Length: 219
Ligand code: HEC
View 1 (cartoon, rainbow, N blue to C red):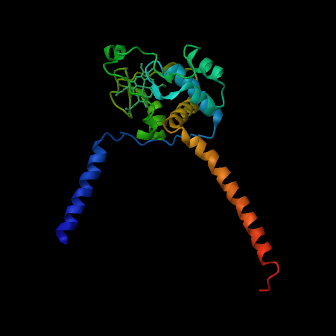
View 2: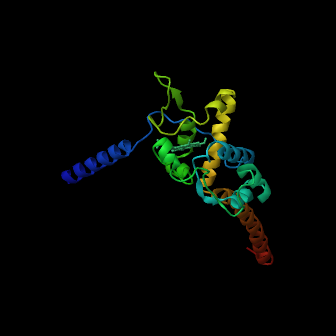
View 3: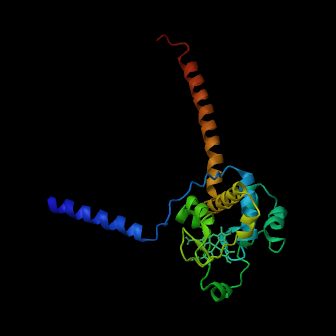
């Protein structure tokens, strides 16, 4: 009995040690406070993502027409806003970087971001985007992902905006990436209300029916 408990204890320790060793962020994550129901934020996030991230990153499981439908744009609008009319509505959202170029310049291939928000969570992305700092040699480093090969791509944006505006931009991009990670979430929210409404109507009808059935019966 005792040795069992010891074994379980050891296993728990190993597992928690492993999760910590598996590259947990070096600093406390900030709460992204993004809101998937905020369509304006999602639209801004999509445009920012196109302008600042698609030079290197893809979200290859998404198509432009799906984004259009979910974010309240027409096909023409999504292509105008995200591709300067350089793609078709049925195309997947691919990076503008040619294959191999990034490895040459940055030493690594930027990951596809389709599932990044599910993998690491929105708070991680939000904090990561706000964590670039100049080190003692005057080079940019990221306190969430130290020594990262991703340059501080939002530097000029940050320099030209107020801290609040920059926080909002990071939140909008995070929001967009969370949506991309699980597009059906938006539909589920929508469906949830309809289901509840349906159940309420059903409840009312059942109640009326019950009254009808019992009307002539003394009880
Ligand atoms: C110049 C190319 C480039 C641009 C532009 C760029 N990234 Fe990256 N990004 C990278 C590279 C390279 C990596 C891999 C970094 C590493 O492993 O050190 C990366 C990694 C990431 C990661 C994963 C971090 C992790 O923990 O593994 C996220 C999230 C990310 N980028 C988000 C963004 C967002 C959002 C934008 C737009 C605001 C953006 N990137 C723009 C090159 C880029």
